[in-house]
Length: 102
Image (cartoon, rainbow, N blue to C red; front, side, top):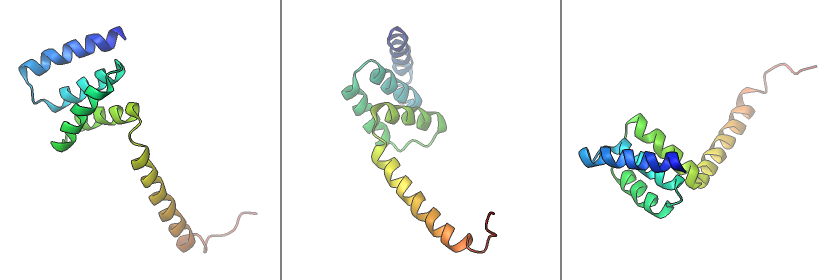
């Protein structure tokens, strides 16, 4: 917990100088999650989502936030279903002509 508290203090210093730095906002959200302050973090994440970040560092930190908030279950479930469907379709079309294992 001490490192997360320190991380929050440091990222707040950065945000005082550059308040719109998306990666810093995402890091603040992550630190808040790890400190058990999920509601505060959720507000930051929602604001970030609205800004549609496209830089890799911000997106990566947001992924950590989602994982730790356990919010990506529905998105991951949809993706898994899509992949299963496409794999099944691929298998039926492309694997019939392959030799069988003996």
